[in-house]
Amino acid sequence: MKIIYSPEHSQHNTKTELSGGELVSPFECADRMEYICKALKEYDLGPLIEPRQYPRSHVEKIHSKNYLEFLDSCWEEWQAAGMKGEAIPTAWPSRSMTSPRIPEFIDGKLGYYALAGETSIAANTARSAWLSSNIALTAADTIVQGETSCFALARPPGHHASKDQYGGYCFINNAAVATQYLLDNGFAKVALMDVDFHHGNGTQAIFYDRKDVFFSSIHGDPTHEFPYYLGYAEEKGAGEGLGYNLNHPLPAGTSYSEWEAKLEESLIAFKAYGADVMVVSLGLDTFENDPISSFKIKTDEYLKMGQKLASLELPTLFIMEGGYAVEDIGYNTANVLKGFLQ
Ligand code: SP5
Ligand code: ZN
Image (cartoon, rainbow, N blue to C red; front, side):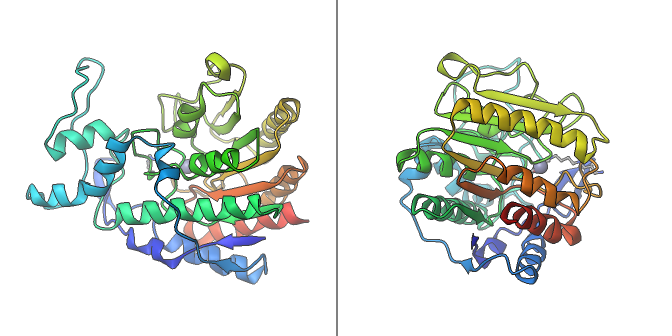
């Protein structure tokens, strides 16, 4: 399986994450990629290939122009305002303040375009986000060219990013950009399976009223887990998209066998839908020792996850999302791909 990767991701190297009332070193860190590359190499899973650069128009089909402009200029504006630390929002257009106006000062813009406050922005964050989307596009192109599987080894991740909001460590929704590219290049119905521990709120929102993408997610119950405000089982799609959104919120302590029963349901729904390609938002934060999550999947069980995903027998594009047990993420990721290829 071709693996699309660039070491340039490491330019997104923020120092702070607001967590538990403290500024800690970010869970979503560059080291994650080192461990993954090492394990993929050890398992001989495929060649690492550099991404190509695609026109911005592919990303503009998913994200609004004003949001992308904000992303590109945020760090300069924050610095120009004399702020000392990394860019973190502190005020939001919350339920009691609903003016549609977008503020002009960076502090107000940050709250407008952020859906959470844990994700800091610094020099090169935007650059790395764009590079990450080019990795997803290059991988999608590999599927368009006829390969039956490909892995977009990208960071920062994407599935929390919506049309015009960042957060949850995500800026550009790589899975959504890749999905749109597949639809624009010969595929008709995309099954988008999000296996990250957190609900893929951004991806769900982007495709919620569309029937050309069936989004399904298995995740920590949002009554107790980030992103809290989306990801419930009653969210089934809207308009033409009604019936093409399937959420499986699960409690803390969920084991692999309980998790797999939900994956089975999603795969059955994808088959009935008639999907001709699958995109997997591959988060490894379902691991038993993940520092910010609460499922109990073991390293060996990721082989079964890969095998199960392969049973759908569709061309499959894997896109890297979360996973924060840095020393284990390599083997967990490699096992999914190895199981898929078996
Ligand atoms: C892509 C992805 O997996 N994003 C996850 C974003 C999670 N953001 C909220 C993190 C809350 C962490 N709480 C830490 C508790 C540590 N004991
Ligand atoms: Zn996650």
